[in-house]
Amino acid sequence: MPRSHEVALDDMSIPAPDFDVRAYANDAQASYRDYLNLEAYRAHPLSADTLRILRYLQVVERGTMTHLRSVLVTATHKDARVTAFLISWAFEKYWIADALDQIIRAHEGGEADRAPFRTPVERTIRESIVANIIGLPMIAVHMTLGAVDEWLMQAAYRRLVELDPNPQLIDTVTRFLATKGRQLEFFEGQARNRLSTSTRAQKVTRRRLAKTPWPIGARAEPRENTEFFFGHLFSSHPSTIVEIDALVDSLAGQKNLNLMKRAAAL
Amino acid sequence: MDTARRRRASPDYLMAFDIDRYTSTSKKVQWGDLDFTEFERNPLPDATLRSLRYMADVEYHTVCYLRDLLVTPSHKEVDVSAFMTMWNREEFWHGEALSKVLGAHDVTLDYDELKATRLKLGWKDRLDPIKQSVLGNVIGKDFIAVHMIWGAANEWSAVAAYNRLADMEKHPVLSELLRRIAKQEARHVAFYATQARERLAKSKKAQVLARLALKGAWGPVGSSIMPAEEVTHVMGHLFSGPEGLREIRKLDEHISRMPGLEGLTIVETSMKKYGVAA
Image (cartoon, rainbow over all chains, first blue to last red):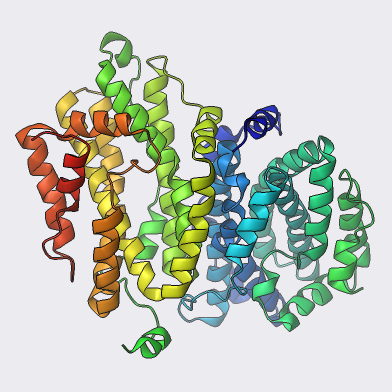
């Protein structure tokens, strides 16, 4: 790597100044199994629609390794602070997916889903070559993808318990949101900082955001499941979609992308 | 070669390794109860610090190794993906624990230094995922077996290295910490070895590939990222002398007991290459 890149990387060594990655890693949220209180669903089961959403969320949450694949083949993997974060992020998401799986199985019985993941067509080689030509701005892309995805996912969990205010589900989702809130802090801090210091990063990120199917991981799911996800959660509450798009607008160089409006086809 | 039928069959390689048990008991290595002020009274010798520095670098580097695994089809399997998540985190915490020991001796190993190491790898490192991806996706499932035996060889080496250093130092804090780390590494061995054994047993092609890869390309853990003189120092420090040789041969025995890998002596051969004298 040319010397100039090293210098540039060093300039960005603390892009989210208020976020202590080591402390975050230290407090990473492990299993929720002790808090799931699955018996509660016997008296107050979740609706079929809620379960369908939970199944979708479970697939999306557990897809961390597929996402990491495209992240780590780029310059992003060189930044030890970012990788330290992502290692704990994957760990936390693993346990959120596990909790969702437990709740689904408390309703439907059966064994854990052991079928191999459906993953989109592998474009690793092309991705890797392109991303390495782009170089450093890819970190901004990945951090922004993370932030936008968090905005959407958190809104989805909130809407889900508004539509089905099951007390036990509310308790569990509140725990998820606390975990996700910390993750968002990192992604958002990183994204804002990296975007504000580089117009090139802004341009590359803009192109990437526009091309990404939301939520991250949707590409591996049949289209009708993603349509149900947006339709069920947001069609009766389109202002949430507008709010997320407004948050995206607030990122340097990412105005008027209307990502969520387009994804939700509202 | 009945690849089609094998591909349709559900992957059930984990009879001897309970993944749920592993994930639910996966913890970051603990050191809060160990008295690190002991290092002020009883500091470690320079040769040991140099080896620890190497080990910490290698542990932190696991995420880059994960990357090479992820570009092959292995991550699509639920159990493998679950394992990778926990394993990667445990190794990260080994790095943190070791850098804490180094810190007690005023040797800093922070995220920026790690980044510098990764930057030094340059283009070779950028090409790795591409190479792996081409190989992995052309050769397909049999390539997973190569990763698994490779992982097993590395984890076996790690267990041996940590236990050996613990034995050599007999330090009340360091040796205890190293044994805790070694215990976690032993669980990684269980995963990789179970996977490797099953996958190799099922496919002659996987055996041929694994033999070829190990014989042609295996080197001591860390040798692909650390300078040769550091590899020589660490391996010599830990594995020279008759006791070291005994450990080295044990490692080769583990590997050569795998289906189709009889007679391989990759560890001994590579140690000689780095000038480790028995």
